[in-house]
Length: 484
Ligand SMILES: [Ca+2]
Image 1: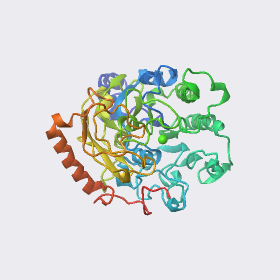
Image 2 (image 1 turned 180 degrees about the vertical axis):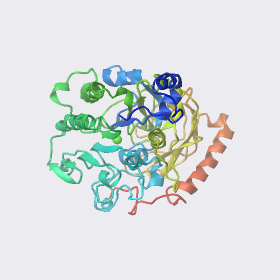
Image 3 (image 1 turned 90 degrees about the horizontal axis):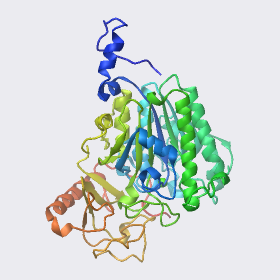
Image 4 (image 1 turned 135 degrees about the vertical axis):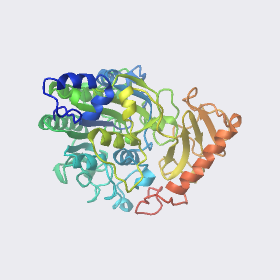
Protein backbone atom coordinates (compact mmCIF):
# COMPACT_ATOMS: atom_id res chain seq x y z
CA UNK A 1 0.00 0.00 0.00
CA UNK A 2 1.00 3.54 -0.43
CA UNK A 3 2.56 5.00 2.71
CA UNK A 4 0.60 7.16 5.10
CA UNK A 5 0.35 10.59 3.56
CA UNK A 6 0.20 14.00 5.19
CA UNK A 7 0.38 17.43 3.67
CA UNK A 8 -0.21 19.28 6.89
CA UNK A 9 3.31 19.46 8.32
CA UNK A 10 5.73 19.07 5.41
CA UNK A 11 8.59 20.83 7.14
CA UNK A 12 8.63 18.70 10.29
CA UNK A 13 11.42 16.23 10.83
CA UNK A 14 10.79 12.54 10.36
CA UNK A 15 11.17 11.84 14.08
CA UNK A 16 8.37 14.21 15.07
CA UNK A 17 5.99 13.22 12.31
CA UNK A 18 4.91 9.87 13.77
CA UNK A 19 3.92 11.52 17.05
CA UNK A 20 1.84 14.11 15.32
CA UNK A 21 0.36 11.49 13.06
CA UNK A 22 -0.64 9.45 16.08
CA UNK A 23 -2.32 12.52 17.56
CA UNK A 24 -4.10 13.17 14.30
CA UNK A 25 -5.29 9.58 14.31
CA UNK A 26 -6.97 9.94 17.69
CA UNK A 27 -10.14 10.53 15.72
CA UNK A 28 -11.28 8.26 12.91
CA UNK A 29 -11.86 11.33 10.76
CA UNK A 30 -8.21 12.16 10.27
CA UNK A 31 -7.24 8.58 9.46
CA UNK A 32 -9.92 8.23 6.83
CA UNK A 33 -9.12 11.56 5.25
CA UNK A 34 -5.53 10.66 4.49
CA UNK A 35 -5.41 7.06 3.29
CA UNK A 36 -6.51 5.56 0.03
CA UNK A 37 -8.02 2.16 0.80
CA UNK A 38 -8.38 -0.94 -1.29
CA UNK A 39 -12.07 -1.59 -1.83
CA UNK A 40 -13.72 -5.00 -1.98
CA UNK A 41 -17.45 -5.28 -2.62
CA UNK A 42 -18.75 -8.75 -1.83
CA UNK A 43 -22.13 -8.87 -3.50
CA UNK A 44 -24.38 -11.80 -2.59
CA UNK A 45 -27.38 -12.63 -4.77
CA UNK A 46 -30.93 -12.91 -3.37
CA UNK A 47 -29.60 -13.23 0.20
CA UNK A 48 -32.39 -12.24 2.57
CA UNK A 49 -32.37 -9.89 5.55
CA UNK A 50 -32.82 -12.88 7.85
CA UNK A 51 -30.43 -15.31 6.17
CA UNK A 52 -27.29 -14.63 8.24
CA UNK A 53 -26.85 -15.60 11.87
CA UNK A 54 -25.60 -12.07 12.57
CA UNK A 55 -28.99 -10.85 11.30
CA UNK A 56 -31.01 -13.32 13.34
CA UNK A 57 -30.98 -16.61 11.40
CA UNK A 58 -31.40 -19.57 13.75
CA UNK A 59 -30.94 -22.59 11.50
CA UNK A 60 -28.03 -21.27 9.47
CA UNK A 61 -24.57 -20.50 10.83
CA UNK A 62 -22.46 -17.90 9.05
CA UNK A 63 -19.44 -17.42 11.36
CA UNK A 64 -17.16 -15.76 8.83
CA UNK A 65 -19.63 -13.11 7.72
CA UNK A 66 -20.65 -12.70 11.36
CA UNK A 67 -17.03 -12.00 12.28
CA UNK A 68 -16.89 -9.38 9.56
CA UNK A 69 -20.04 -7.86 11.08
CA UNK A 70 -18.56 -7.88 14.57
CA UNK A 71 -15.39 -6.16 13.36
CA UNK A 72 -17.22 -3.60 11.24
CA UNK A 73 -20.54 -1.81 11.09
CA UNK A 74 -23.69 -3.93 10.74
CA UNK A 75 -26.38 -1.89 9.00
CA UNK A 76 -29.99 -2.69 9.81
CA UNK A 77 -31.75 -0.28 7.41
CA UNK A 78 -29.64 -0.50 4.29
CA UNK A 79 -31.69 -0.39 1.10
CA UNK A 80 -31.00 -1.51 -2.45
CA UNK A 81 -32.64 0.34 -5.35
CA UNK A 82 -34.57 -2.61 -6.78
CA UNK A 83 -35.77 -6.01 -5.61
CA UNK A 84 -34.44 -7.77 -8.74
CA UNK A 85 -30.88 -8.40 -9.88
CA UNK A 86 -29.98 -6.16 -12.83
CA UNK A 87 -31.47 -2.84 -11.68
CA UNK A 88 -29.99 -3.28 -8.21
CA UNK A 89 -26.54 -3.89 -9.70
CA UNK A 90 -26.82 -0.93 -12.09
CA UNK A 91 -27.75 1.36 -9.20
CA UNK A 92 -24.92 0.16 -6.97
CA UNK A 93 -22.29 0.62 -9.67
CA UNK A 94 -23.53 4.04 -10.88
CA UNK A 95 -24.90 5.55 -7.66
CA UNK A 96 -28.10 6.36 -9.58
CA UNK A 97 -31.66 5.06 -9.50
CA UNK A 98 -32.32 2.35 -12.10
CA UNK A 99 -34.83 4.68 -13.82
CA UNK A 100 -32.17 7.39 -14.06
CA UNK A 101 -29.34 5.16 -15.32
CA UNK A 102 -31.55 3.29 -17.80
CA UNK A 103 -31.76 -0.14 -16.19
CA UNK A 104 -35.20 -0.53 -14.60
CA UNK A 105 -35.92 -4.20 -15.42
CA UNK A 106 -34.01 -7.46 -15.28
CA UNK A 107 -32.00 -8.20 -18.40
CA UNK A 108 -33.03 -11.46 -20.06
CA UNK A 109 -31.92 -13.80 -22.80
CA UNK A 110 -34.55 -12.52 -25.23
CA UNK A 111 -34.34 -10.91 -28.64
CA UNK A 112 -35.67 -7.52 -27.61
CA UNK A 113 -32.97 -7.23 -24.93
CA UNK A 114 -30.10 -7.74 -27.39
CA UNK A 115 -29.06 -4.08 -27.08
CA UNK A 116 -30.06 -3.75 -23.43
CA UNK A 117 -26.93 -3.17 -21.42
CA UNK A 118 -25.46 -0.65 -19.02
CA UNK A 119 -25.26 2.47 -21.19
CA UNK A 120 -21.74 3.44 -22.33
CA UNK A 121 -22.27 6.97 -20.94
CA UNK A 122 -22.93 5.71 -17.43
CA UNK A 123 -20.03 6.17 -14.98
CA UNK A 124 -19.30 3.38 -12.51
CA UNK A 125 -17.30 3.13 -9.30
CA UNK A 126 -14.65 1.31 -11.36
CA UNK A 127 -14.46 4.20 -13.84
CA UNK A 128 -13.83 6.65 -11.01
CA UNK A 129 -11.22 4.51 -9.27
CA UNK A 130 -9.39 3.67 -12.49
CA UNK A 131 -8.73 7.40 -12.90
CA UNK A 132 -7.13 7.37 -9.44
CA UNK A 133 -4.69 4.64 -10.50
CA UNK A 134 -6.55 1.81 -8.85
CA UNK A 135 -6.34 -1.68 -10.30
CA UNK A 136 -9.93 -2.76 -10.99
CA UNK A 137 -11.50 -6.18 -11.46
CA UNK A 138 -14.99 -7.66 -11.57
CA UNK A 139 -15.46 -11.33 -10.78
CA UNK A 140 -18.68 -13.35 -10.97
CA UNK A 141 -22.14 -12.46 -12.21
CA UNK A 142 -22.45 -9.35 -14.38
CA UNK A 143 -26.09 -9.29 -15.55
CA UNK A 144 -25.93 -5.77 -16.99
CA UNK A 145 -25.96 -6.80 -20.63
CA UNK A 146 -23.09 -8.29 -22.56
CA UNK A 147 -23.29 -6.40 -25.82
CA UNK A 148 -20.10 -4.51 -26.60
CA UNK A 149 -20.22 -1.24 -24.68
CA UNK A 150 -22.02 -2.83 -21.73
CA UNK A 151 -19.43 -5.34 -20.59
CA UNK A 152 -17.38 -4.92 -17.41
CA UNK A 153 -14.27 -4.05 -19.43
CA UNK A 154 -16.30 -1.23 -21.04
CA UNK A 155 -17.17 0.17 -17.63
CA UNK A 156 -13.90 0.76 -15.86
CA UNK A 157 -12.95 -2.78 -14.97
CA UNK A 158 -9.53 -3.64 -16.32
CA UNK A 159 -10.34 -7.31 -15.88
CA UNK A 160 -13.44 -9.47 -15.78
CA UNK A 161 -13.74 -13.13 -14.91
CA UNK A 162 -17.19 -14.65 -14.70
CA UNK A 163 -20.55 -15.23 -16.34
CA UNK A 164 -22.49 -12.71 -18.35
CA UNK A 165 -25.61 -13.36 -16.28
CA UNK A 166 -27.13 -16.13 -14.16
CA UNK A 167 -26.07 -19.75 -14.56
CA UNK A 168 -28.99 -21.55 -16.13
CA UNK A 169 -29.31 -25.25 -16.95
CA UNK A 170 -31.70 -24.60 -19.84
CA UNK A 171 -29.47 -21.89 -21.35
CA UNK A 172 -26.03 -23.54 -21.55
CA UNK A 173 -24.77 -20.65 -23.66
CA UNK A 174 -25.02 -18.52 -20.52
CA UNK A 175 -22.85 -20.95 -18.60
CA UNK A 176 -19.54 -20.07 -20.27
CA UNK A 177 -16.88 -18.40 -18.17
CA UNK A 178 -15.42 -15.25 -19.72
CA UNK A 179 -12.00 -13.78 -19.16
CA UNK A 180 -12.56 -10.17 -20.25
CA UNK A 181 -14.36 -10.59 -23.61
CA UNK A 182 -13.23 -14.15 -24.36
CA UNK A 183 -14.79 -17.46 -23.35
CA UNK A 184 -12.21 -19.47 -21.43
CA UNK A 185 -14.41 -22.30 -20.11
CA UNK A 186 -17.52 -23.61 -21.80
CA UNK A 187 -20.71 -24.75 -20.12
CA UNK A 188 -19.21 -25.08 -16.67
CA UNK A 189 -20.77 -26.96 -13.76
CA UNK A 190 -22.52 -24.50 -11.49
CA UNK A 191 -20.93 -25.94 -8.35
CA UNK A 192 -17.44 -25.17 -9.63
CA UNK A 193 -17.99 -21.42 -9.82
CA UNK A 194 -17.91 -20.32 -6.20
CA UNK A 195 -14.50 -21.88 -5.50
CA UNK A 196 -13.14 -20.77 -8.87
CA UNK A 197 -14.21 -17.16 -8.28
CA UNK A 198 -12.73 -17.16 -4.79
CA UNK A 199 -9.38 -18.47 -6.05
CA UNK A 200 -9.31 -15.77 -8.73
CA UNK A 201 -10.12 -13.13 -6.15
CA UNK A 202 -7.38 -14.30 -3.79
CA UNK A 203 -4.83 -14.34 -6.63
CA UNK A 204 -5.91 -10.80 -7.54
CA UNK A 205 -5.46 -9.58 -3.97
CA UNK A 206 -1.97 -11.10 -3.81
CA UNK A 207 -0.98 -9.62 -7.19
CA UNK A 208 -2.14 -6.15 -6.16
CA UNK A 209 -1.16 -5.94 -2.52
CA UNK A 210 1.39 -3.20 -3.23
CA UNK A 211 -1.10 -0.88 -4.98
CA UNK A 212 -4.67 0.25 -4.39
CA UNK A 213 -7.22 -2.09 -5.94
CA UNK A 214 -10.97 -2.35 -6.39
CA UNK A 215 -12.45 -5.83 -6.48
CA UNK A 216 -16.16 -6.29 -7.24
CA UNK A 217 -16.93 -9.93 -6.44
CA UNK A 218 -20.51 -10.82 -7.31
CA UNK A 219 -21.22 -14.38 -6.22
CA UNK A 220 -24.16 -16.31 -7.70
CA UNK A 221 -25.09 -17.55 -4.23
CA UNK A 222 -27.83 -17.74 -3.11
CA UNK A 223 -29.78 -17.19 -6.34
CA UNK A 224 -31.24 -20.30 -7.98
CA UNK A 225 -30.19 -22.96 -8.71
CA UNK A 226 -29.94 -23.88 -5.05
CA UNK A 227 -26.98 -26.20 -5.62
CA UNK A 228 -24.25 -26.22 -2.99
CA UNK A 229 -21.30 -28.54 -3.39
CA UNK A 230 -21.64 -31.98 -1.79
CA UNK A 231 -19.28 -30.99 1.05
CA UNK A 232 -21.88 -28.50 2.28
CA UNK A 233 -25.02 -30.58 1.87
CA UNK A 234 -26.60 -31.39 5.18
CA UNK A 235 -24.35 -29.02 7.13
CA UNK A 236 -27.12 -26.66 8.24
CA UNK A 237 -30.45 -27.10 9.96
CA UNK A 238 -31.96 -24.89 7.31
CA UNK A 239 -32.44 -27.33 4.38
CA UNK A 240 -30.47 -27.19 1.13
CA UNK A 241 -30.93 -23.42 1.04
CA UNK A 242 -29.29 -23.14 4.44
CA UNK A 243 -26.42 -25.32 3.24
CA UNK A 244 -26.05 -22.99 0.26
CA UNK A 245 -25.82 -19.94 2.56
CA UNK A 246 -23.21 -21.73 4.67
CA UNK A 247 -21.18 -22.51 1.56
CA UNK A 248 -21.21 -18.81 0.68
CA UNK A 249 -20.05 -18.03 4.19
CA UNK A 250 -17.19 -20.53 3.88
CA UNK A 251 -15.84 -18.90 0.72
CA UNK A 252 -16.23 -15.39 2.07
CA UNK A 253 -14.15 -16.67 5.00
CA UNK A 254 -11.44 -17.97 2.64
CA UNK A 255 -11.26 -14.58 0.95
CA UNK A 256 -11.10 -12.66 4.24
CA UNK A 257 -8.40 -15.02 5.51
CA UNK A 258 -6.33 -14.30 2.42
CA UNK A 259 -6.77 -10.58 2.96
CA UNK A 260 -5.59 -10.94 6.51
CA UNK A 261 -2.64 -13.19 5.63
CA UNK A 262 -1.48 -10.57 3.16
CA UNK A 263 -1.54 -7.95 5.89
CA UNK A 264 -4.21 -5.89 4.15
CA UNK A 265 -7.01 -5.73 6.74
CA UNK A 266 -6.20 -2.18 7.77
CA UNK A 267 -5.74 -1.05 4.18
CA UNK A 268 -8.99 -2.42 2.85
CA UNK A 269 -12.59 -1.30 2.98
CA UNK A 270 -14.65 -4.50 2.84
CA UNK A 271 -18.31 -4.12 1.93
CA UNK A 272 -20.67 -7.08 2.10
CA UNK A 273 -24.27 -6.83 0.92
CA UNK A 274 -26.99 -8.56 -1.06
CA UNK A 275 -28.54 -7.33 -4.31
CA UNK A 276 -32.15 -7.92 -3.19
CA UNK A 277 -34.28 -9.88 -0.78
CA UNK A 278 -34.90 -13.63 -0.80
CA UNK A 279 -36.93 -15.41 -3.49
CA UNK A 280 -39.19 -16.83 -0.83
CA UNK A 281 -41.99 -17.59 -3.30
CA UNK A 282 -39.81 -20.11 -5.10
CA UNK A 283 -36.70 -21.12 -3.22
CA UNK A 284 -37.00 -20.22 0.45
CA UNK A 285 -34.74 -17.96 2.39
CA UNK A 286 -35.73 -15.53 5.09
CA UNK A 287 -36.45 -11.82 5.24
CA UNK A 288 -36.55 -12.06 9.04
CA UNK A 289 -39.27 -9.84 10.48
CA UNK A 290 -39.78 -8.09 7.15
CA UNK A 291 -42.78 -8.64 4.88
CA UNK A 292 -42.45 -9.72 1.23
CA UNK A 293 -39.21 -10.58 -0.57
CA UNK A 294 -37.63 -10.48 -4.01
CA UNK A 295 -39.92 -8.98 -6.71
CA UNK A 296 -41.76 -6.83 -4.15
CA UNK A 297 -41.45 -3.29 -2.87
CA UNK A 298 -42.07 -4.45 0.67
CA UNK A 299 -39.07 -4.13 2.98
CA UNK A 300 -38.30 -7.83 2.45
CA UNK A 301 -37.39 -7.02 -1.15
CA UNK A 302 -35.35 -3.86 -0.61
CA UNK A 303 -33.82 -4.00 2.86
CA UNK A 304 -30.81 -6.29 2.78
CA UNK A 305 -28.04 -7.36 5.17
CA UNK A 306 -25.09 -4.98 4.78
CA UNK A 307 -21.73 -4.81 6.54
CA UNK A 308 -18.82 -2.41 6.11
CA UNK A 309 -15.45 -3.06 7.74
CA UNK A 310 -12.24 -1.09 7.67
CA UNK A 311 -10.16 -2.42 10.51
CA UNK A 312 -8.56 0.22 12.66
CA UNK A 313 -10.19 3.02 10.67
CA UNK A 314 -13.91 2.80 11.32
CA UNK A 315 -15.62 1.66 14.49
CA UNK A 316 -17.54 -1.56 14.99
CA UNK A 317 -21.17 -1.76 16.01
CA UNK A 318 -24.72 -1.66 14.73
CA UNK A 319 -26.14 1.23 12.74
CA UNK A 320 -29.85 1.75 12.03
CA UNK A 321 -29.60 4.79 9.75
CA UNK A 322 -31.62 4.72 6.52
CA UNK A 323 -28.98 4.28 3.80
CA UNK A 324 -28.80 3.10 0.21
CA UNK A 325 -26.51 0.93 -1.92
CA UNK A 326 -26.30 4.00 -4.18
CA UNK A 327 -24.34 5.71 -1.37
CA UNK A 328 -21.36 3.46 -2.04
CA UNK A 329 -20.24 5.30 -5.19
CA UNK A 330 -19.88 8.78 -3.67
CA UNK A 331 -18.48 7.36 -0.43
CA UNK A 332 -15.85 5.23 -2.13
CA UNK A 333 -15.04 8.15 -4.45
CA UNK A 334 -14.43 10.37 -1.44
CA UNK A 335 -12.21 7.83 0.32
CA UNK A 336 -10.20 7.28 -2.86
CA UNK A 337 -9.85 10.99 -3.56
CA UNK A 338 -11.86 10.67 -6.77
CA UNK A 339 -13.91 13.51 -8.15
CA UNK A 340 -17.61 12.91 -8.77
CA UNK A 341 -18.95 13.71 -12.23
CA UNK A 342 -20.72 17.07 -12.26
CA UNK A 343 -22.73 16.56 -15.44
CA UNK A 344 -25.39 14.29 -13.93
CA UNK A 345 -27.42 13.59 -10.83
CA UNK A 346 -25.87 11.11 -8.42
CA UNK A 347 -28.63 9.82 -6.13
CA UNK A 348 -26.29 8.28 -3.57
CA UNK A 349 -24.83 10.36 -0.75
CA UNK A 350 -21.34 10.34 0.72
CA UNK A 351 -21.73 8.49 4.03
CA UNK A 352 -18.12 8.87 5.15
CA UNK A 353 -19.27 10.76 8.29
CA UNK A 354 -21.44 7.78 9.25
CA UNK A 355 -18.56 5.38 8.69
CA UNK A 356 -16.30 7.59 10.80
CA UNK A 357 -18.62 7.80 13.78
CA UNK A 358 -20.72 4.67 13.35
CA UNK A 359 -23.83 6.80 13.66
CA UNK A 360 -25.62 9.80 12.21
CA UNK A 361 -28.82 10.85 10.54
CA UNK A 362 -29.91 9.68 7.10
CA UNK A 363 -28.62 11.79 4.21
CA UNK A 364 -31.77 10.92 2.25
CA UNK A 365 -34.81 13.15 2.59
CA UNK A 366 -36.74 10.54 0.57
CA UNK A 367 -36.00 7.12 -0.94
CA UNK A 368 -38.08 5.73 -3.81
CA UNK A 369 -39.14 2.13 -4.32
CA UNK A 370 -39.67 1.33 -7.98
CA UNK A 371 -40.79 -2.07 -9.23
CA UNK A 372 -39.74 -2.04 -12.86
CA UNK A 373 -40.89 1.36 -14.09
CA UNK A 374 -43.70 1.62 -11.53
CA UNK A 375 -43.18 3.86 -8.51
CA UNK A 376 -44.75 1.86 -5.69
CA UNK A 377 -43.54 3.35 -2.42
CA UNK A 378 -41.71 6.28 -0.85
CA UNK A 379 -39.70 6.33 2.32
CA UNK A 380 -39.14 9.34 4.55
CA UNK A 381 -37.35 8.41 7.74
CA UNK A 382 -39.56 6.03 9.67
CA UNK A 383 -42.50 6.58 7.29
CA UNK A 384 -43.18 4.41 4.26
CA UNK A 385 -46.10 5.10 1.98
CA UNK A 386 -47.25 2.45 -0.52
CA UNK A 387 -48.86 4.01 -3.56
CA UNK A 388 -52.00 2.86 -5.38
CA UNK A 389 -51.32 0.67 -8.41
CA UNK A 390 -53.10 -1.81 -10.67
CA UNK A 391 -52.10 -5.31 -11.69
CA UNK A 392 -51.34 -3.90 -15.15
CA UNK A 393 -48.80 -1.50 -13.63
CA UNK A 394 -46.66 -4.44 -12.50
CA UNK A 395 -43.55 -5.73 -14.28
CA UNK A 396 -43.87 -9.29 -15.55
CA UNK A 397 -42.06 -10.81 -12.57
CA UNK A 398 -44.63 -9.48 -10.14
CA UNK A 399 -47.76 -9.71 -12.21
CA UNK A 400 -50.46 -11.92 -10.88
CA UNK A 401 -53.53 -11.62 -13.03
CA UNK A 402 -55.66 -13.16 -10.32
CA UNK A 403 -54.64 -10.63 -7.71
CA UNK A 404 -57.44 -8.72 -6.06
CA UNK A 405 -56.82 -5.09 -5.23
CA UNK A 406 -55.84 -4.86 -1.61
CA UNK A 407 -58.29 -2.76 0.32
CA UNK A 408 -58.28 -4.16 3.82
CA UNK A 409 -56.13 -3.73 6.91
CA UNK A 410 -54.60 -7.14 7.55
CA UNK A 411 -51.33 -7.43 5.73
CA UNK A 412 -50.21 -10.70 7.29
CA UNK A 413 -51.50 -12.79 4.42
CA UNK A 414 -50.33 -10.84 1.41
CA UNK A 415 -48.60 -12.69 -1.39
CA UNK A 416 -44.86 -13.18 -1.07
CA UNK A 417 -44.68 -11.07 -4.23
CA UNK A 418 -46.07 -8.12 -2.36
CA UNK A 419 -49.10 -6.01 -3.02
CA UNK A 420 -49.93 -6.67 -6.67
CA UNK A 421 -52.70 -4.14 -6.69
CA UNK A 422 -53.62 -1.43 -4.25
CA UNK A 423 -56.72 0.77 -4.21
CA UNK A 424 -55.51 3.45 -1.83
CA UNK A 425 -52.27 4.54 -0.16
CA UNK A 426 -51.04 2.58 2.86
CA UNK A 427 -48.81 4.21 5.47
CA UNK A 428 -46.49 2.39 7.86
CA UNK A 429 -44.26 3.51 10.71
CA UNK A 430 -41.23 1.27 10.30
CA UNK A 431 -39.80 2.24 13.68
CA UNK A 432 -42.39 0.09 15.39
CA UNK A 433 -43.77 -1.87 12.44
CA UNK A 434 -40.88 -3.02 10.26
CA UNK A 435 -43.11 -5.83 8.96
CA UNK A 436 -45.47 -3.28 7.35
CA UNK A 437 -48.49 -4.91 8.97
CA UNK A 438 -50.55 -2.01 10.28
CA UNK A 439 -51.75 0.74 7.95
CA UNK A 440 -51.95 4.03 9.85
CA UNK A 441 -52.76 6.33 6.92
CA UNK A 442 -56.01 7.49 8.51
CA UNK A 443 -54.16 8.75 11.58
CA UNK A 444 -51.53 10.73 9.66
CA UNK A 445 -53.19 12.45 6.70
CA UNK A 446 -50.49 15.15 6.61
CA UNK A 447 -47.75 12.55 6.04
CA UNK A 448 -49.82 10.85 3.35
CA UNK A 449 -50.39 14.19 1.65
CA UNK A 450 -46.69 15.11 1.70
CA UNK A 451 -45.57 11.77 0.30
CA UNK A 452 -48.25 11.75 -2.42
CA UNK A 453 -47.03 15.17 -3.51
CA UNK A 454 -43.46 13.91 -3.53
CA UNK A 455 -44.61 10.93 -5.63
CA UNK A 456 -45.94 13.34 -8.25
CA UNK A 457 -42.68 15.28 -8.23
CA UNK A 458 -40.48 12.22 -8.64
CA UNK A 459 -42.69 10.72 -11.37
CA UNK A 460 -42.11 13.90 -13.38
CA UNK A 461 -38.35 13.48 -12.91
CA UNK A 462 -37.82 9.71 -13.09
CA UNK A 463 -40.97 8.50 -14.83
CA UNK A 464 -43.59 5.85 -14.22
CA UNK A 465 -45.91 3.62 -16.23
CA UNK A 466 -47.15 5.75 -19.14
CA UNK A 467 -44.92 8.69 -18.19
CA UNK A 468 -41.35 9.48 -19.25
CA UNK A 469 -39.37 11.45 -16.70
CA UNK A 470 -37.33 14.59 -17.38
CA UNK A 471 -34.15 12.85 -16.17
CA UNK A 472 -34.92 9.27 -17.15
CA UNK A 473 -32.78 7.15 -19.45
CA UNK A 474 -35.31 5.03 -21.33
CA UNK A 475 -34.28 1.44 -22.25
CA UNK A 476 -33.94 0.71 -26.00
CA UNK A 477 -37.05 -1.44 -26.44
CA UNK A 478 -40.82 -1.23 -26.17
CA UNK A 479 -43.13 -2.76 -23.58
CA UNK A 480 -40.41 -2.38 -20.98
CA UNK A 481 -42.14 -4.40 -18.30
CA UNK A 482 -43.23 -7.29 -20.53
CA UNK A 483 -40.93 -10.25 -20.97
CA UNK A 484 -41.99 -11.16 -24.52
CA1 LIG B 1 -30.66 -11.01 -7.11
